[in-house]
Amino acid sequence: MVSLSNAQIPSPQSPCTSSNRIHLSLAHSMRTLRPGISQPEPDAPSSEPESDLDTTLTDSFIDTCLCELAATVAPSASKSPALDGSITTGILELSRDFSDYSSFNSDISGELERLASLTRSEAPNSSSPDLPDLDLTSSELLETMPLESLEPVVKACIEKLSTSLEEEKRKATARIRLLAKHRSDLRELIGASGAIPVLVPLLKSTDPATQESAVTALLNLSLEETNKAAITAAGAIKPLVYALRTGTGIAKQNAACALLSLSMIEDNRATIGACGAVPPLVSLLVHGSTRGKKDSLTTLYKLCSIKRNKERAVDAGAVGPLVRLIGEGGLSEKAMVVLGSLAGVLEGREAIVEEGGIQALVEALEDGPAKGKEFAVAVLLQLCADSGLNRAMLVREGAIPPLVALSQTGSARAKQKAETLLGYLREQRQEGGGSGGGGTAQANLAR
Image (cartoon, rainbow, N blue to C red; front, side, top):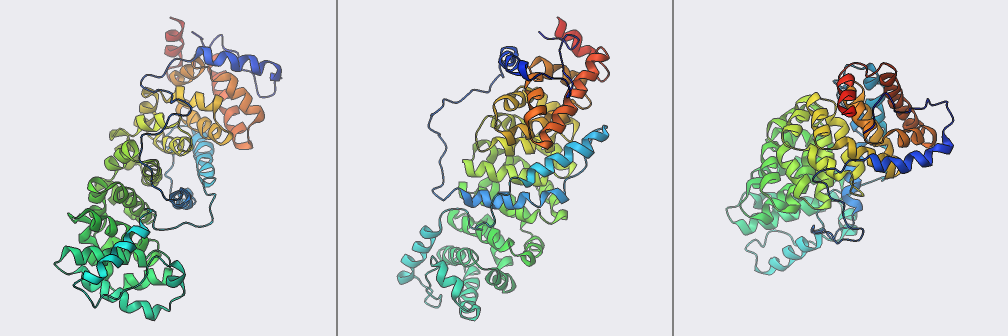
């Protein structure tokens, strides 16, 4: 074991380039195995079902929404001023870096052609000849048609939503979903025409296809700013949470995105959490497809801008799955951002440590990409700012060599955080364990 009193923590100014490679090779030998976290085989096939839609669609939606997070993240609960001024700001800056896309597509389910094919095939046998037939898969057609030409289609669909026939509701809901896909003015027209109040009850439909289309139609409509308040006023939040719990895989991930969209209204975040959204989001994080996990991660991060939802996420068991995702390519960075948010409450920091988060984050420091290292050091800084015990554990896990390397070769943000964290470790070593549990940690490590 390594004690803090014997750990060599070079200052940022001291030359240590020649020894970095040696220290890095020793870091792995000091690592304890993380219980319950297995390393996947390099080319092992995934057991998750994947949507056949181009993966940039949901990524774009998530990444676009992450641009807006900086204005709404609550201050850190830590006693250390450095956390508010450095760590929280750094997490937000890193969150903005997720936004690599200039636009996104609202309908992310990958079912457009199937739905349009369904509505066309039903048309000859439909008992609703007054529902205009239109090729809704043609984006060119929908984007060029005058709004007044589409208005009768919208009104006919809304009328059919109130029918007692399930087949009529299914067809009309699918059409509204597709009509709301492309154009802002068409989404505004659909919302103003009264579609929202009749779509909301269909979120609890016992017909999976109707429920799925209602969820996605409301997601699409929510992208129009004027519709967000109308969807909230229509009482959609609780039924969306119901769909998040009970729907198809596509309905669940689109319900998560719809709640994300509604959470852009600050007052909605507490309501969404109080309506029970956090546990099914954690379930989606564990059991969903890769796309569903991404939707869950982003929605959780947005909701966890308020303290009560952070606590709900910890209570719902979010930390363990998040720690396990640190080792998964494509999800690692987003998982660390959410962990950074949960580390803003004491319960979150304790859970991260208990679930092996320090070990996982140190591995990300050593082996992850440059951006992943920035996220990892930011979360570790939150965990260690006020805890001598966590600082001791960090040393034991071999974090000093990768921190030294990051302080010299990382980005400006990464260098600053690595230097701050190394400063904490030097301070504790010089004080013989320091405060906040450092002495206990040193005694434990010496046994």
